[in-house]
Structures are given as structure tokens and as C-alpha cells.
Image 1 (cartoon, rainbow, N blue to C red):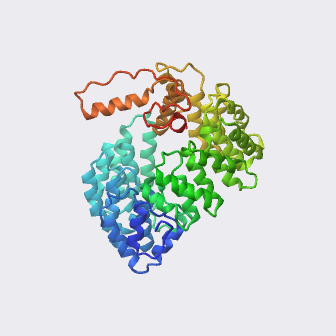
Image 2 (cartoon, one colour):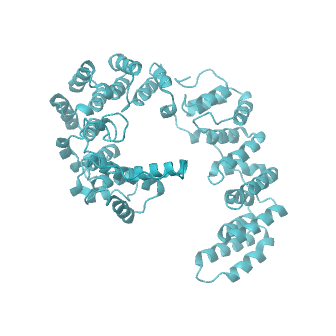
Image 3 (cartoon, one colour):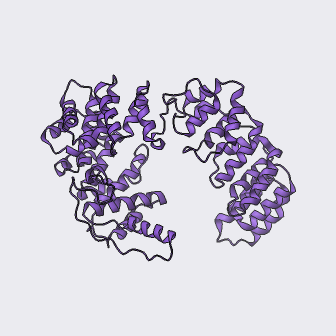
Length: 512
């Protein structure tokens, strides 16, 4: 099953995908369709089975399959899908429900009652979008207008029942001119009530257009034994992906042996390269380290394999023979340069800092690749190139394609921004970054992690991580007093144990 969809029924295919053992791509979809008339029934049977044991949520896939099958029996599944995430209803689920028309009204009304006004906004929107004239729906939407005027007005306009006009006009008369946004919503709703009712036309749906040609299994949710098994897959892409999943991890003996075998004997250079990279945890073993160095410096080897060896050797990148190999790859340019830069910043060896500043200028033709710029940003952060902080900040708010580098730039800026690094100043740095470019909640978490990383690099205990641990401890036992501030840690060397307590060396853990 790990090598991709094979001879199996729809239920078995869906279970394998839910367990993360196969990727959901066009081949996978075709395998389901090849099951013929039983496919829709088996998909329904799977959707009704308990899903809690599975690491992968297949709701989006099942919605798409039922849309493709035009399965009328799927209504209950759609309602359950909304119940599981009532404030995260995507367009695919809305389009799946609209054809049910009047049949969807009763279950949606019951769900709205269950969720309540606070969490029922999307359900109210869906009821309005059905445009089924039902006094219960009309009352619900009028109540919605009183609870949340803007949301209720939008839903009433979408519903299109002229009986709502007096309520909308009354509210418009009561809203002061200063609340321009709300008045605009009310005006728009009234305009919609006067417009001809649109005829519902189902959107055309192409199942295959929603999915990639090829998708590897989500290795991060698999057990180690399953990933080791995938190292022997007949599919080279899966062998390479499975090997990559062990990168920067502590390797036990069976995993190390399997990767060592793969690195030396696999027929595909990309697989050998990923295996060499994953063996970075084993560079203290002379036989493995010497073999990796030989591959790195062997110009007859494929570049893909040499790049993997370079990445696997980052922990010993201060050795002359490794330095020579990395500089050789860097000089080659292209993909080889990208991997050389990654190995350099992961090494934390200061002499490599000189390579990064030149690649922060995307106006130079040789610097326009996103992969190269991403490694340049990482290096500028970890080597704390404070003199180039403004260049890093230029990637905060960029148009495509450079908008993809925003999170990399935020992380790098938090590491390299000007200012004295102390535990007392670190929250001020977070506020400063938020002042420069407004952070989303997810970005705030990222910057907090980066600022804790900055403290670790200066031999200081993290601030934000400690606060989260305090909050968790207080949540478990409110009566237990919070622990005091952690004492400053000695500045970790590249070969010292990581202060986070993982048991790894710093250069292979938070230093990576």
C-alpha cells in the first residue's frame, strides 16, 4: 500500500489515506473510481465509521468524492462535517449542500439550534443561500439581524424574501451616519431584495482538478516502523521521501542500518542523497562520515547525491575536507549552491557567515530563486547579520512570488534585528516586529520561537517557552505555584547538549 494505490477496494484505500500510508493524488482518485458502482457506497460506509483513530482528516476528500458521485445519501455526512468545524466551512462544502434545497433545511435548522447564535453564522449563511421559503428560516435570519446586524443583513439580502424589508428599513433608520460600514450592509441587503431572484445553477465540478498529479504520503504522521518499511518501496519517490523523514532525527540501530544500505546501494541518486542527508546523526561513526566525505568530494558523483552528503555533514562542516566540498558545491551555483548554503547555516560555524549577505538582493539574476533566497535568509538570521537587517525586512510584504518568503524573513529578522539580547528586552523586540509589520497569531508564535532561539544562541533561557510551560502547569493544577524564572544557561557550544533537554547536541537540535 505504501508504494501507491494498488488493487484494493474504496474502503481500504480511504483507510490507508486516513492512516497516512498513501498520498491523495490523481492516481489515488482514479483507483477509487476504478472500483465502479461500489465506490460511492463504500465511501459512505467509511464516512460513517469512527474517525478518531486516524491522524489524517479526510472530510475534504469525502466531500469532493460525494460531489462527484452526486450521492444523495451524503447529506448526513455533510451536516456532521459542519458540526465538526462550524466556523470553518469552505466553499466546497457549501456547493455540495446547495443542490439538496428543501431537504437540507430541517437538519440545518436543528444544527443551528445545537450550535447557538455565537457559532451558527455559517449555518445561517447556508440556510439563506438555499433560498427555501420557510417561516422558520425567516425567523432565524431576523433574529440573526438583532444578534449581529451586519451578518444578519447580509444573510437576509442573500435569502431574498421581501418580507424582511420592514426590519431592514427600521434598522437602517436607527443606525447613525457615523456607522458607515453597517449602513452600507443594510443598503446592499435592501437592494438585493429588490433584485430579481437568481436561478440556481450548480457550479461545474472537476474532481481531478482539485488534486495534484502526484502526492507522497504524509510521512510525519507515520510510525517509525512504517517509514522504515517504505525505505524498501519499489517507488523511488517514496523511498526518497521516507529517507528524508529521518533527517535531523536521532537514529536507532535498525534505522541507521537501513539508511546506510540505501545510501550505498540504491539505484537512484535522489534516494542516495536523501539517505546520506538523514545519516547526519551518524557522522560520529568514522566509516559513515568518511563515506559521506568521499561522496561530497567526488566530482564524478551526481550532484543530487553530493548535495545530500553535504547536508548530512553539516555537524562536522568545520573539518577541512568538508569545507572544501561545500565550497566546491557553492561555486557550482544552482541547486548545488542552495544545498551548500543550507549545510553552512546549519553548521553554525562562523567562517561561513560571509557567504550569505550577497544573496539577500533578489534584483541580481543569480539570486532570484526562492530556494536560494530562503537559505540566504536563514543564514542571515542564524549568523546574526544585524548590519543587513533592513534587507531581511524588505521581504516582509512583497508581491508574488516573494510573498512566500515572509515567514522566513520574520524568523531571520527576529534572530538578527538590532538590539541587546537579554531576557528583559525580548518582549519589546516582539512588539517592535509587530509594529513594523502586523503579525497574525501564527506569525506571532513563529517570532516568539525565533526570539527564544535568539536567547539560546546567547546562552540565555527562553522566555516565551517558559511562560507557556507555566500556563500548562497552572492549567493542570491551579493550586500549584508557578515556577520561578529559569536560571541563565551557559552559552551552548556547537557540540554541547541542547539546552531544551532533547538529549541532542545543540547543533543538531535548536541550533539546526
